[in-house]
View 1: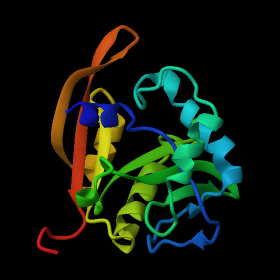
View 2: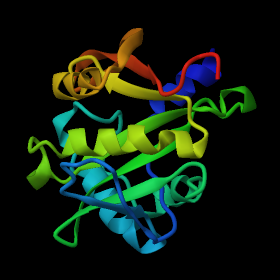
View 3: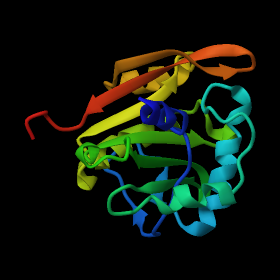
View 4: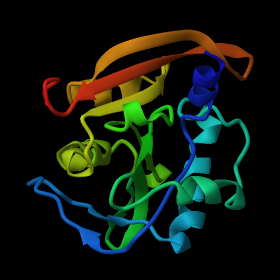
Length: 197
């Protein structure tokens, strides 16, 4: 149980990799996706840090350094646990990552998805585009189940995931302390392939 709780508090860290531009079948696509490279890490961390002050997205309470996210970056692999840069008009506007759940072999087909957007590009529908892209591509990486770890008071993110059929699979009440307030964590999940596959 101790390992599990430790995992939950690390649920929003950072990753990266190759460069080949990726394409989506989504008809309304306005963004492009590519595998992150080491040179993208500073911007990835900058976008991540921009969410901390809201106390709605991450359990980090202070900005993180690029060096502290190097190991996280190296844990991502383009052929299995991708970290994608999201670009619009040739500028990075966000990123999305697949991260192994719980680090045990039996959970290999289950990943946690994390999506982060630049402040100037939030609330413009890009989250839907990114999540749809991720769902569409997940089977290519052997992923059967997607998980999201979302603070219970983060209503916009919960609404986004519910829109795509994610269900509430678990609630951890009052496990985080943010600005003197206790906050709960909701685990949302979606099966990408039928359970018998």
